[in-house]
Image (cartoon, rainbow, N blue to C red; front, side, top):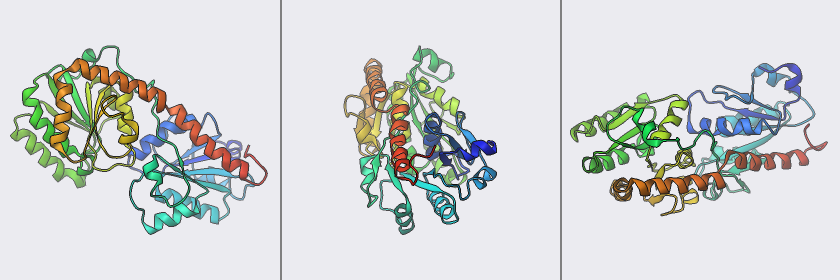
Length: 356
């Protein structure tokens, strides 16, 4: 918790009102410490990252009826609701919402969006569903943390898995993430490519246990239990380690808000085959920094992966191009600076000028 003086100086509150760790939490955790270098910022809720002050309800109470406004940057409906209620009760909040959804919103979300002072969309496609003006700010990634290893073969060898190369698919094990599409493609390809092991990194939540068990049955029936590995949920440092072990990354979501794993894998120098979901079409240069395929199509996924598995040197070259694109276009600093411009516009429009 921060002290009373620091609470009174806050310019930005980053609420994270969601107990389960999710993709939204991950993107929030990455960019917030960069924003905290630009604004006096506090994180409200669980999963606070290093580099930003953690605040609690007592800190929030000290802001009641303060004259200078504070940015409240929501990323979920419940965070928008909390911001609207707090402002109605006398908290001096300027409300910002980041939307990654690529679908028509419910009536309550549409109403909440209308209450915001500024809207950020993570892609032009997301912006098209908002029915109001939005600033497009695509996600960034820490290219120092997500970086190629000095020796990818040695990094893979650390895993103790069979073969010489790994192909991965990350995300919670469920149909929306296309885990079944990946398993089907691997069941087709791995028998012909003994140097490869496939890895699914992600949590298996109780409501998806039946789905996960069916995938395990399919893997066992194909005789590939030692070569298609489900790690379950891992600590973020272990996830980062797995990116460095991969030669190829498969992004298989059927639908997605943005798809942060796209740029994480590219930053780590993985060759990429990506379903046309989330921000894939904006991030990936088809045939150059990755290959785009239709979502939910295991046959198309396998057909795109096979040339890369057949020629690991070609995969490595694609991974190097992917890394260069992320460094140029999708850095965390670029994302933070673009968000900061949105904040500054609200501060300049506030009574009394900037909040500082």
